[in-house]
Image (tube, rainbow over all chains, first blue to last red; front, top):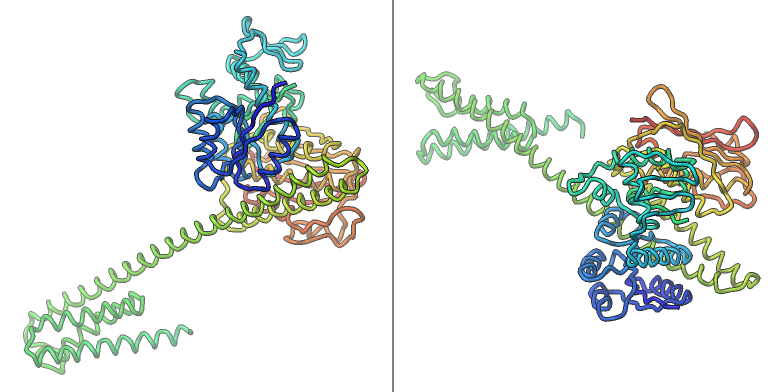
Length: 230
Length: 351
């Protein structure tokens, strides 16, 4: 089994220790740093497979680290931040971060997110161009433009279909309002999150048993949506 | 200071300044300085009076008195209010007008300067406050995260009946409690600010409730919350995160007071008058009658000594009320009619 190397960028030493220990216990190799500049250097010099990045670093912003690393690497990056920093989270996700964790988080949650991000990364690398996308009971047939839940066909509008396809291709990943609108409407996507919410409400009424307890597409409040994996 | 005392002080100041202007005028006359300069000295005195008294009325009175004094002391015949040269009437008119007008302008400039100063101080204070909150929240949350993570680690490392596991669990639970305290205090500080920094936009009610429910179910495995919404899509103006926190607070309470298999539910009903009613119901012991009128008061804790429920410090519901009211809604607490349990009823305007 291949053990991934994870770069931890975190300025609080106790949290750095706790995360490092959790990951080592789980079988990953760990590299740690508290500085942004050092993080960029390590990401390039060491065989790093993914990065955990704290947004509030002493020397320069986490967002700057992400920006520099994304210039040459598509490695999964999970943002770690405080609760009231929605703006920074959205900015980081739009810049190509894969997921975010809000402090305080548990070891279990951390490991689950890391596995999710790595799985998503490998699937993407393996050229996820399958014709039929599956999530539990849900099947989306790209050739025939049809969606099934179990045996039953679900009739979607063109936009609802595109929206669902986007989530089926990005299972497990947080998609921000901005990135969804961009994928649906192209370059001039604007920022009509209100219309997106209404579209999502329509899709949920067709997919979910209870719209306030969705099984497939969950709301990430203030950020966007995420399709959970089966 | 009483108004009367203040006005007599203003009167004295006015008379002194006019007297000073007259004396300087005599000095000018003795030195054979042009008469116009004496007029200017009086206008200057009027300006100073307006500035000092901060009143247009006193400024105007001073302008008339100044003109009269100039007439009385310096125009032929002196020590009378009559003049030989009728050209002086024009001088008096202009002098009064200039003095009154300058007084008005002075006052306006003064008011504007004070306003600018106040505004700048206010922004500075807000900035300071925001920075302070930010750093406090960072400085409190970060070590709590360390404590929670590390104690959780120790729990996971020790076997089921190891006493260290129980001790680590205690540490974890205390840290978790402290953490929710910090979050609520921060929320309260932000809300009590008056000029609440909440940013409302059109939001889907089902998403706000849904995210609160999923957070509670994640944190309390073993509890299932029954949510019943109407089929229609309900939009409200809200700060989504703040409003979701209200439901988290209410559900958290419900979970604390309800045994594992007891029902906890959220019911949403549309009302005719562009309002939506949201009920959060549990099957706990309900709210003691003595507590009912006070549950939303800040720092109010129950008079009943519950057995195994950790007492709150009376923040969650107080914060919830502030948030709901900032959304032009209402919140009330009551007990269930169909058996034991509490009901929290929130109404909010819909779009």
